[in-house]
Image (cartoon, rainbow, N blue to C red; front, side, top):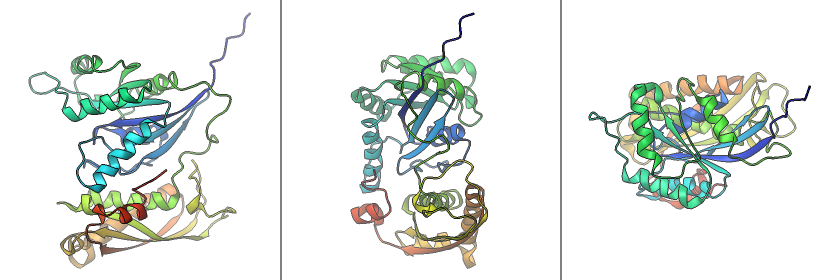
Length: 330
C-alpha cells in the first residue's frame, strides 16, 4: 500500500491589514490563544506592528498585526499608517480584513479609505487573502453581498469569512494563508516562540489598554505609556539573559515577582486629572486591571506602580515617538 504523501512544510510572514477596528488584533489573539495584542472598541488602538507566531505541524505563519489604514493627520497617525504600509513590502502574503454586514438597505458601502488600502495591497504585488471578519455579528445571507462587493476590487487569492471573537472558520483562514507562503526547509522561529515583543513592551501595552478601556473623552488618543523599571530579580529561575530584552515564549510561567514602574503620558493637565480620577480612583482602577492581566501573561505576581506625567504635544514630536518605540521601529 502506497504511503500518503506528506504536505510540504511552509513558513512565511503575513501582514494583517485593514481599516481601524476591523478585528485584526482580535484575530491575532484568537490564533495565538493569548491576549498578546491589546484590544479596545476605539479606533487606532494598535500603534505599532506586533508579531505573533503560529506554529502548526506543517506550517509556521509569522503574523504581523498592524495599525489601521486611514487617511492620517498628525505625526502619530501618519507614522502608524507608515508602519502598516512598510510592512506590506516585507512579507510573503497579505491578509486584508473587511467587516461582514450590510447597510439598512442591504447594500455594501466600500469607503474611499478601504479602496485606497486595497490599492496599496495591489501595489505590493503580494498574494492577498480577503478575510471577511465579524461573521458572528451578521446574518449568513448578508455575507454573499459583502463578498461580491469586494471580489471585483482585487484579484484575491482566496476569500474567507470568519469570526475572531468566536473562532468560527479561523482554521479555514489559516489553511488559506498557509497555501500562499513559501515552502521552507525549516521554521522561521523556534516552535515555542510566540512573539518578538519584549515583556517590557507588553507591560506598557497592557497599561495603555486599560487607559483606553477605563477613560472617556480624548484621553485614549492623547495617552502613551513608558515603562521606566522592569525588575525581575524576584522571579524564579531567571534565565542567563534578562527576559525584558528577550522573546516571550508560550507557556513561560515561572512564578515569583516582577516589579514594574511605568508612567502614563498625557498632553494636558486636564487629561492628567481625568486619568488620576477623584482621590486617585481612576489610576487605581487602571493599575488593578493591568496588573491582573500582566500576572496572567507573565505567570507570576506583579507589583505595578503607575504615575501620570504631562508631556505637551508628545504625539506631534518625532523625538517622543522614537523614545516610545512608535517611530522608526524595525
